[in-house]
Image (cartoon, rainbow over all chains, first blue to last red; front, side, top):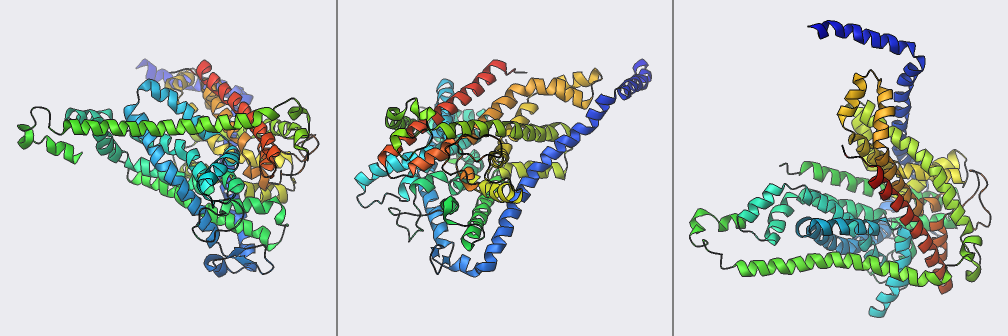
Length: 313
Length: 302
């Protein structure tokens, strides 16, 4: 064949020509390396986070015993005889996250079912961007809204409610997370093949039956993953709880009183109470480490669920 | 699904040839649930509406020219946003190029150069996990690495580097999607003309994907503009009555000033905070509109 004979010579011509262009060659060699360096920086960021937290946490545990950190039920770092038990902060974090989930999961899932199964294309295309606005509002704005609007409104209903409480930031955080649950769950439900719905419709199922008994089970792994990711988001959320949740550690499950979360503690301490090099200073890293471990575990769990239990059609 | 199929098994067919007797009930249930689902949508939209109306009514009274020309003050009626406004612009001007170069570079490496091996998989997993790290943890990293170890102090550049790392995963993921959307025919044609890999990327792939990349970057920056916690961590919350002069200057930004005013007990400061929020939301709206405009105007479908 002609082309087979010619190919090497053309390639050689191209190579000859390319080797004449020193600049092109240099770019060809250096560019991949530059991009590789960029990619490595993202890995270094993770290393940076882990090492930073690890070193400062180790310093903290050289001053406070790890047993006290894990088992003590008191968190009073500013006392003259300080207590460093992480439990009240964990309690506050998970209580507020739970309140948020009570709002976000049912509403978000209902929105997802409506958008994916009931809404027309036009309605879906209108509502989704508006919901994204809700997700794009800075968290400090939600914090402001919780403190200056939701808390006074709730105080009118619940007389014993303190100005700084767990309920108000929990509810507002739930509203903030609705779009996240809705959009991730909707993605999972939209990925269910149309043929499955049509099969069920042909068997005489109503739209509700198709949604709940065909689409929902088929998309379940994605939906559960969206819940887990949302919980992780709620645990890591900072400004709403810092502004509206107050600065006293939880004293039990009383959501009408102040409950400090891990994130709020980190921010409030860095606002000025903690001098560099003090035990209190290192305690924010120990709390940060705990926070990092929980959110990382949640994110890995979400990835595992959506990979392991995915239904392939 | 099981029950649906049971109803229509051959044995039951004779019984259900005409409409099943329970159909009206099932359809009623369908309508009830449709209303419930639609109510959930209505609830979300209503919350957004309440939030926006509340902030506008609270802040509109304090929204005047003085807000832009005055520095922060102990007196709410004289308090202004000059320093945080300029600080936010500085912060964006520094964060945008750093995060753009790093993010787009990483994405080009992953999409165009990387071989499908363990190392590539590691970078990819790493990026999706970084996206889930709480922003306050990035603040701890910035405090230790940039403020203390690299001795940048509580400066603009320390804040901008922290912010860049924070939004890096968002830019990488959106750039990867934009690069993937370029059809391989375009690349093949370029290679067939004798172009090298880099020439193909620079002259064919990047021009075709630039609208997607820009949209993703602007959306990432609009996340950064509202971030508060990481900058509090690196110590941006100080009383600032001067404008930044260099990248080593101390600074404050809009969300931090809003946080400061929200934390004060006086009602008047809450009103100024609301006015600040209006300005912040308008900035966000502008950025998002530009992103949507770029997407609609320049995005080519292949």
